Image 1 (cartoon, helix red, strand yellow):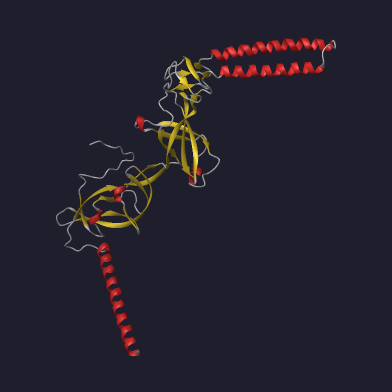
Image 2 (cartoon, one colour):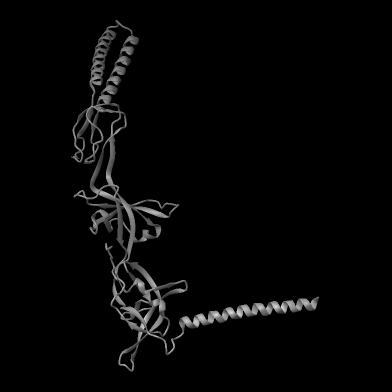
Length: 379
């Protein structure tokens, strides 16, 4: 039994050793193929190249936000009634306190006059009883009752007067009116929206930033805002407030910027893209993003080496694999922080067929785009 177990263990060890040995052999050959130099009979590969050049690089914080009015409200009226007068048109600019709408108030005005008459009579009665009290003709209780009745009627007068006032809608602030939602003679229930009023000058842009960006922004800092309505038009804004708390769920903080909107081009509710310059501009080596081969074990590029002229008098070009450290991106470009220096010629297309030492032929008839601010093109 022991002999059989020993034989079995030896066989298992041999099998496992063979499996691991074969795997290491295959991995070694793959690594040799990927990184080793090409043989003398290797065919030159056609690639596109570009020079690594330094450029001014401004770090930018980007976000998306929405526009909102400094003051904005859907105007309605607190009481029900029938529309008697309309004193505005859709799209009007109005000042604070302008009368916009009035409901029919004949009954309420009549009731107000009736209560005012009763209050006047109660005042006369109170004054007469006061004189009689001084002459000791009436009791103090009668005068007290007259005073309470007078106060009650005066309160009813104020209540009715406020009800009459509520029959009129006035602009609570200066702004731009939207589309009228009611018509003359229409019965309105309490709270029915009549028109929207928005103060459009200035206008706010609200957006969210991650908490790590707080050290890079401050009140009064300038920023740029774009809305797709106006294409490439950029609106300048200034950060006017930063929320006093960071949202515990998203770790974002709300930021508000103020824009001048005297032309009334921007409207509340618009979607906006925000760009905030962060820090001072830097000189960084820039390459097209297509030049970077992104891999799990590191990002790399292929640098072109000139081995001199060959027997045919043409330059002998080969490539050298180099790992790089990349920075921020903008458009079609990427900043290279380490691994490539100014003036290096780098392969930007055709890397899939390359490895160390491969001979190449450069054909830059068609090259990848290298635009910091690319624009969509309709074909």
